[in-house]
Length: 47
Image (cartoon, rainbow, N blue to C red; front, top):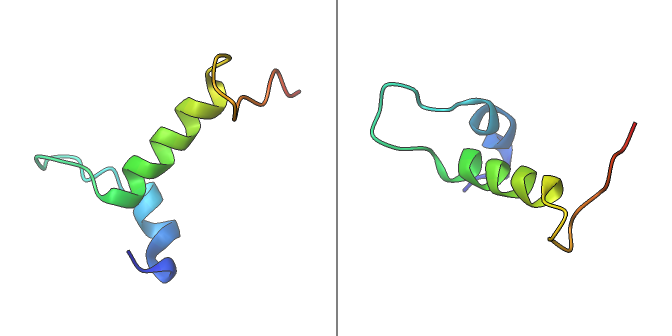
């Protein structure tokens, strides 16, 4: 994965294909960890 492509890849869900790109999937995994109250990365109810 090239860091220069991060922003474009995180926004790109590759709709219409058989899978996701690795950076998009990593972004979704990190988001789900931050929203899961049972995970160590949980950030609580930020307002």
